Structure formats: structure tokens, C-alpha cells
Length: 446
Image (cartoon, rainbow, N blue to C red):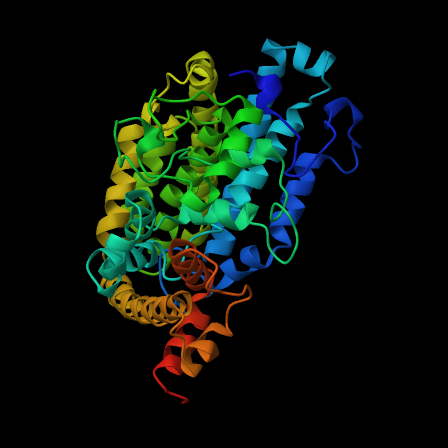
């Protein structure tokens, strides 16, 4: 892969080539990507979507919105530091094409800002609830009516693929969705493959999938423009990652490792003094002991350690990326950046505590159970109605249900696309809105 192609400013529908040298420095294309994401309704809805604690009434607990903003800030730092080194190593990128180190930061920041935009209500349990409906619930009836890959899209409903759909799907007459640059779309797509075959290798790009069948052609256009390397010789769509996708992933890993841990402390789920020792272990090479002990409030000590930990892991991720740049460009780097970190043991210790004390806490588990029931009911209601429309058997009730859709469902659409549209609609609901709709479809008007 070549940086000149990987940094493409092209957008869907462009007829003329966008050159970096001709960009308006006060309104750079990669920065426009960030603006378009942050002003989108899908991004705003993240303010009422679960990060860790579903339906939490505690103001300092992170939502998907605050998490995404923080990941974006970390991603910008990662991109700028990597960009500075890349331009020193490949001076033609600046001299011939006009790229600046801030361009790398802007691409990663925009992609990181959008990284959770496709996640359903109730966190990762929301994805599992949608998939379980098709794998073990009434949705199994669709298996024989869909291709294996279409059915797999549903039983493994994936927020990353749903995010690509949100960012690129033509809607209300606007081609290409948000019309982001292909560089940003490439950096956004951590898993540049379709749903089958499932996890064919241990390569990090095979951990999940990132493109529904409905967006395959759109992603292929992006991949070809960026010069992403194809994987395998068969007919299954699979590419090696855009190098900057590793930085988006690292930004997310850094934030959820440190900040979910911090949320657990603030909620009293993790004992504070016990937790601070784990953070100190992570930053022991850079901590200013005198400054730390002069902080009187435990909240100030926690904030200091959190800031130091994030900075430590940013520096580490940049070093790993630059050390393995050639391998990444050749598609030969198969791990997440932090998996190669010298701090991997400390990171794993922190994540293990977060899993035991936060992710598996009574509060989280009970609300995830409720979320399962809410999403199962909504998915069943909407898929049943669209199925009747496609088969020409719709009732007045179905027409009332489907008034919620912004796009029209008709008999001309394939069953796969209508079912996916129903899942897509439910996935874009906030936690609160999904609860309201759940009450309505059950006839509860309290």
C-alpha cells in the first residue's frame, strides 16, 4: 500500500480528482469529515446510548457520545505524531503532494469520532440481542429465504458494519450518506471484510466483519481507490486494513481500558486505593512521585494517573506503529498495536478487573437482560411488519408500525434489504427511545 493513495480526499460521486495541494487550508477536506460526523443525527443519538452502564442516572458515567469524543481526541494525537514521522521518512508526501502532519491527525480524529456510530442501544449486548433473535428466536424463519452471507449479517449483527452503512448509505436523495473522504472511511473500517467466512484466521482484521452485503460495492470502490491489498484468492471480499485503522483501534483501546476503569472507580464498583495501584504500575516509569503525593483529593490523584496513563499508551502505540510501518503497509502486521506493547501485562490486569467488577456487575447484567427483551420485541415487531409488506400481506397495523421508518418499505425491495432496514432502524434508536417504543408496541401508555 502507498501513502499517496491511502490519503485520498475523494468522496462518493466525485467526478474531478481532489488534490491536497489545491485544498483550502481553512476548510481542509479531512476536517470537513469531522464536522459532518459531529453534526449528524446518528452521532447526536450517542448521548443516550450506553458505553458501559446501561440507563445510568449518574452524570459522570460515560455515554457513547463522551467516549467517542475522547477517543477522537486521543486519535488526533496518535495521527499527528505518526504523521510527523511519516512525512520525515517520506518527504515527497509533503514536497510533491502537500500533505501535512495534521492531515493524519484529522483523518484519525474523524474516523475515531464515528467509530461507535453504528452501535445499537444497550451497548454490545444490543448487538448480541439482535443477532440472537435471528439465530435462536423467531428470526430463524428467514434462514432458508436468504443467502448464507445475508443471514450471517443478521445472526452476527455488527455495529462496525452498521456504522459503515450509516456513513455511506444514500438517504433522502443524498448520494453517499455523509460523503466522507475515502481516507476517513478506510481508517474507520477496522474489519474490511464481509461476514463470511467467519474468523478464518487469527489476523486482527478477521476478529469481526465491517461491511454488510448491502454495502459491498460501496466498500470495494473505497478499497480500490485507496489501494488496499486484497486478502485471499477466492470470491470472498476481504482486504488488509488501512494503516490508520490501527490508530483508530488503538485510540479506542486506550480509552476504554483507562476510562471504563475510571468509571468503575467513580461508581464504587472498584475499590479506589486498590485501583490506583494498578494505574501506578502502568505509569511507574513516568510518574512524578512528589507531585502525586502532593495531591490531597483522591479524585485529583485519579485524574492525574488517568492523564499520565493515556499519554503513556499514546507514546507506546506511536512507537509500535512506526517500528512496524513497513509490515503494516504490506499487510503483514496481524495484531492490534497495544498487543505488541511493553505494557501489555498491566493493560490486561486493568481490563480483567473492569470485566469482573464493572462489565459483570449486578447493575450492568440486570439492565442488559432488560435490554435484551426490549430489542427482541422491537426487532420482532418491525421484521414481521416488513415481511408482510414484501409478501403483499400487510395489515393496517403494519402500516402504522412502519410509519416510524424514514424510508419507504415496498414489495419491490428484497427481503434481505427490508429486514436489514428494520434492524438498522432499531439500531439507531437511543436507549430511552427504544424503551418508549417498547411500551407503545405493548400497548402501555403510562
